[in-house]
Length: 167
Length: 422
Image (cartoon, rainbow over all chains, first blue to last red; front, top):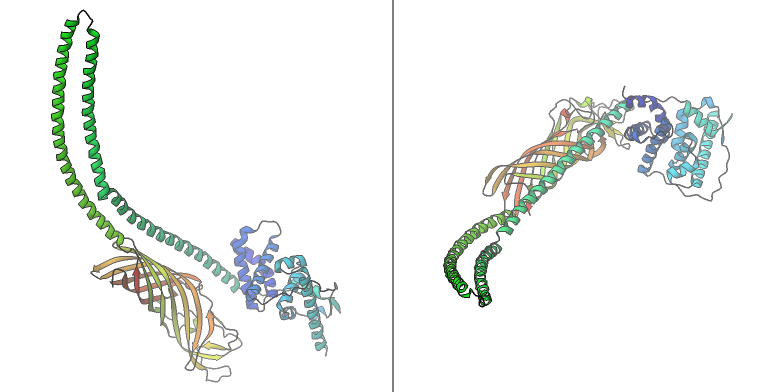
C-alpha cells in the first residue's frame, strides 16, 4: 500500500464529510474531495508539522471547497459593522433521534451561500470569527451577523418542519 | 425537547457515516497520473522548445558572423592601404639603414679631422699623418666603395621594389577579386531570407485505429463511429538552418470531431441513464440511448447522432528536410511533435430537426501530444513570398484519462498558406 493510498484510506471519510457540507450535490462533494486530495499530495511537503496532520488536511479541504464557491462567484458578503448581534444560544424543539443527517445537510444547502459558509466554518468546523474574517476577507461583524441569520433561518426551518410533521 | 441548534448539527454530522464511492480514489489516481504526465510533457516540450530556439539563434549568429569578419579582413581598400603601408614601411627601413651608414661614414671623417688637429703638434706628426692619411685614404676608398655599393644596391633595391610593387599590385588585384567574389557570395548568403511566417488554413479528418470501442460509453461499442472533416487555421514560423534543413513552430487551432450514429434521444430516466464519459448539461432533460424505447415504452424516441468535438490549440515543433528542389518547387519531409492544449469540449445531439450542445466529455486530458509526419511543398512566388502546402498525419497521445493510447485519435490534414520571408 503506497503512502498516498494509506492517507486516503485513513482520512477520506472525514474529509468527505466536510465536502458534503460545502457542496450542493453528492457529485460536487466527490469532485471537491478529489481536488482536495490532489492538492494534498501536491503540497504535502509544505506541511511543517506545526499542528496535527488531520487539521492540515481539513484546512486544505475547506480551502478547496471555498475556492469552488469563489470560482462560481455565488457568494458576496455585505459589510455589516454596526449591526447589533445578540449573543444568544439558539434552541430548536426536536427529538434528536427523529432527525436525519440528510435532512440537516439539506437545510444547510438551502441556506444562501454566504450564510452557509459562515455557519459551516463556525459551527461545524469550529473556526473563530477572527479566522473566518481572515479566510473570507470580511469583517468580524459580517461574520457574526451571517452566523446569526443562518442560525435563525435554520431554527425556523427545523421548528416549522417539525410543526408540519406534528400536524 | 429543546436542544441547542449548534450541538444538534455537530452531533449528527460527527456521528454520521458517509458512503464514499470507490470510483473517487480511482479518479484521484488517474488525475495524479495525468498531472505527472503533464509535467513530463511540459518538461519534454520545454526542452525541445529551448533546443529549437537555441539552434535557431546559434545557426543564425554563426551564419551572420563569418561574412562580416571576412568582409572586414578583405575589404579591398583597407587591405590595399595596409599592403601599401607595409611596403612603404619596408622602404623606409631600407632608406634609414642607408642614411645610418652614411652618417657613420661622415662621423668617421669628423673624428679624423679632430685627430688631425690634435696630432699636428706631435713629433711623430708626419709619420702619424702619413699613417692617418693612408688610413683615411683607405677608409675613404672603403667608404666610397661602400657608398657606391650601397647606391648600387639601393638602385637594385629600388628596381626590385618597383618590381615587387608591381607583383604586390597584382596580388592585391587578385586578392581584391577573390574578396569581391567571396563578399558577393557572403552578401548573397546574407540576403537569403532565413525566416518565413506563413498564415495557414486547412481541413483535417479524424479517425481511430480501434474499432468497436466507443470512448463515450461501452454501450455504444456497436454503434458506427466515424471522423468528421474539420477546419483548422493558424500560423507557422520557419527558420532555415541550412540549405536542406529547416525548423518550424507556430500556433494552430484545430478540431477533432467524431460522429456516433444510430442513437436515440430519450427522456431523462431515473436510474442508470448516465453515460460513463460524458456529463450532461444540468438543464437538459434528454439523454442519449441506443434503445428507441422511451420512458413509458413509447417507441417514438427521437433518432439522433452524437457529435463529439474536441478543440485544440496546437504548438508544433518540427524539422523540415529537403527532398527535392527544382527551380521554384521544393518538397520537404516534415517530422516532429506537437503540444496540444484542450480548448473546446462539446457533445452535440444532432437530429433531423436540431443540433444542440447537451453535454461535455469528462475524460479528456487538458494537455496531450501528437507525433507528426508529413510532406510539405513550397512554391516560390517571388524572393519574399512562397505558397506552402503540407499534408500531415498526426497521431495523438494522452488524449483520454481513462483509455489507453490505442483509442487516441489520429488526424490527417492538409493546410496551405502564403508565407512571407524575411
